[in-house]
Image 1 (cartoon, helix red, strand yellow):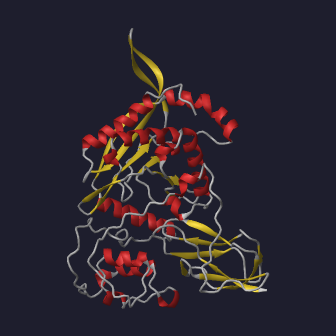
Image 2 (cartoon, one colour):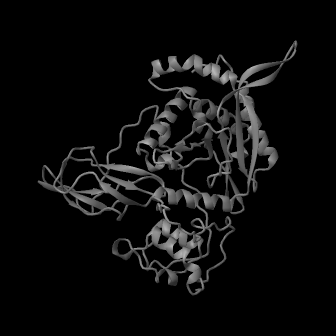
Image 3 (cartoon, one colour):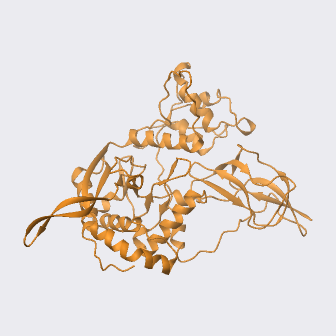
Length: 438
């Protein structure tokens, strides 16, 4: 028998650690190769860690709610044979072979890194990337950090610790942040979390603590609204041809491909064409620089069964056919709702679509996810009487109409660009060719 150390695998660019949510097996249990043995959570996504070998779990090294670094041992397995791996050996977890339909999803774009503070740290304290980022955003000096009692492993400062410190900072004696050299221009400093206020609790009120994902969503939304001055344009689109085309092809497509044909691939195709017409929508801001993105990666806001929200990303959407988009969208949506997304599946979006119509809403004013500069909300498709122009004059007919709203960052996207982008999406959908192949 030999000892095998199960390490926390790499989870994509910028992800350096994860929190143990729950172990799916106990010490003494036998596991088979590729069994998911533990659920983990990063700031991006929840996922499972499979074991690349069969054996018996003899020791769990990282318990629930503890943090593990990428490459750190989280459990010890007893396996058949001699030798086994040691702490100094690199252990590679198995990944499924790529298929033509999923290969495009494996592209990972390095997230945009921006500096929001001049605070520097000596390295005497261990700080996770997230904690360090919050400390820099809030100008918390190293001397202040040393006063925070960490609740993590070996007294490490967790996200909850530092956010709790920030929320009570106004009641603490003011401390001077460490001086530093002038940094390059950066984006405006954003708060790390929603402002904390005291709310009276009446008899019978229920207090429900936010779960981890809801806290992350709250932080990101406050940050996005703080950074970007939002402007929203609206348009009503006649999508009668889109509805007719889908009704004609959905059964054929499902029989041929074994996949549902929703409206989303059509919307994504129209958005991609409009981005190609107006590439300055596909940008990010880094200080006083505009980063024009080469890839067109479309995020699609997806509601989860627990009420939370996640945004998986269709990588290189401009390189996919309608059929390819349908498969990629269905795959991401299924894995999002079943907590099977990989961290890289939620990274690198350059533009996002939110389908508020799936909840029966006519329109919405979505918040732009950072560091993108625009987001499209699609409303419900509703039958309405509409005026049509014909060669014989105007007539009233029943049409399939839909509102779209386009929110954009007024720092770099003016009303003309944001409005023309929306009008082009409108034109592509309203003039959808009924002979389009799939």
